[in-house]
Image 1 (cartoon, rainbow, N blue to C red):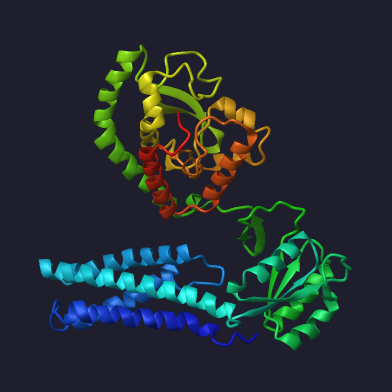
Image 2 (image 1 turned 135 degrees about the horizontal axis):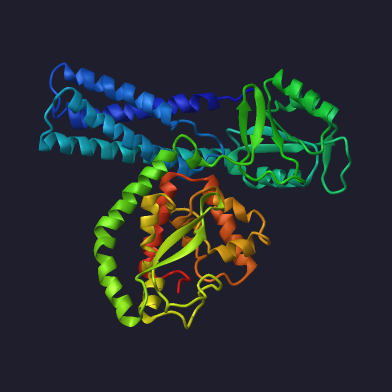
Length: 457
């Protein structure tokens, strides 16, 4: 498979990054003579080797055609954080005192390095897309087997030309009145040689086993990539994960990121964030707000309610009490102009202040800062029967806030469609979690609280 210059993109990007790195080191470290003598050589060696190792470990050069620009920038940010730590570690290892000037030079070097890399990635990302629109850096592709997904995939190839795919038709032993068939499955080898074929997309649900094996044999022996479109009649989900039990391949519907070896990152974030809220906010807010709550109505300051959490286990969620004491809190949702709400309750619900005691739940481990919102037990029992994949949200700990909440799905659930949208966003969060996504959700939650851009009441 001829790929022209694609194989040079990653090494070229790496050497360009290294060149820019050494340029800023020269301008901000060597030229001002911040590091003296033989230590300049050691500094350059450590920085260059460190960049190479950390970049490969973090995978910042694993950029493919379908890689999103946001992921590229996030990877660069992670790389700069690691590299910044390594930079300051050098001065600790060599016991070099950090004067005010050295610190200033280091921060300036890191700032210009980071800004340069983001600028170069932005330029290259959009330049390559433009280059593909003009006909360069392309892949010749065909689809073997006709199904519903065949048409959708071919439309992607045709309409998203910036990704550089040239679609050359469908191949099938079955006739189609709706789609033009370029040939039979047996015609693919001759056609592949004719156009220098790069990729074959096989509809696994409509091809026979011997046809698939034949195409795999042909592709593997002719350096052609072969990919498989799942059977559209089976709902595999969007995050199918290949796992190996010894040498036996097994597909899982999803891999939940924070149930892997990096789960300590999320738990660490939960402990740090909840500790901050408990010490600096709840420590004084509970007695102050508690006074206003008790002056307006009798009853406890903190309201407790059983909800469903991780693995559908019940736990007690904590909230500031926003209602008059009543016996219906476990039977009905809170609605707009709910007569059970107190005056102070309306305010704290509108601003989400009533949720703050849940950071105690986070610290104790029954909740997370970000995750699917825990529903009352009666709602879980109700919607688990009528909403498809509703229980998927209980694969993880519930959160004080979540992706569905910042998208406007908060407050009373008025119809099944609202719940389906919540579950769709909860499922997306579970399958695509990153620490940066958690931070983004937290920031947007705080902004929405100030702007009152939600449905809370």
